[in-house]
Image 1 (cartoon, rainbow, N blue to C red):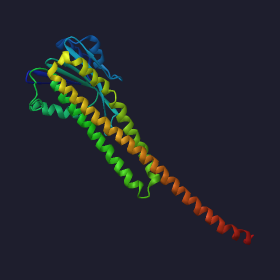
Image 2 (image 1 turned 120 degrees about the vertical axis):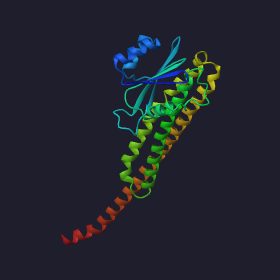
Image 3 (image 1 turned 45 degrees about the vertical axis):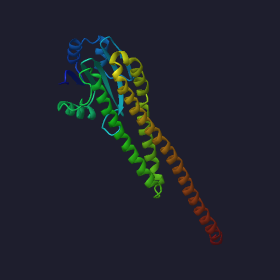
Image 4 (image 1 turned 180 degrees about the vertical axis):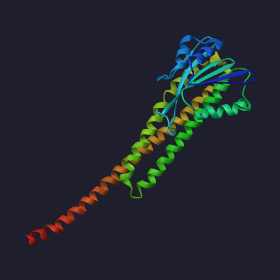
Length: 261
């Protein structure tokens, strides 16, 4: 499916599960390399960024823990030219859907130098996607609080699985987000010629967003490690108390057994 949006001289083409005809149409209209066209047709496992003469092409993956997808991540391909932006994805991505509504009312590029480059649209879109990752982290944080509350309410056994599932979610977040670091660094280093000096602060702002998210993920990782250790200690204590009770009962009942025999 191909959706086209235009504002302030910038065209945004959003492709969801694109067909060969749709990709070919976009390639011809914007002069894309045929290798890029092939990449747009199918998902790619590895994030990367490539600079061409009149556009850049980058692949990024974003966590999708709270959605009903086969995978815990979603891919978005970006092709950024001077006056156009092409996004490609292979399932519905809520932040992009919301972004399209904002873009239609011409408010997303307010206070940005939108007449200069579609990079400002790319910047606004990435910030919206990173905001969605914050929502994922908020959900994980709520799970951690729930586990803590139940942990000290005597539900240690029930929390073993919950801790494991939460740790899996945090690991998925970390594995999905960490490759962004190299992509953003390459964009900052090599994107000056492409975007211009005025765009450098925006690229650094994206890096700051990334590091803030990464720091939150690492804090959640540390918290879960401590919760795991605490849960194991509580389980060991409870097992020790159970064994002491059983041992006491055995000592009390054994003489009776001998007498009855």
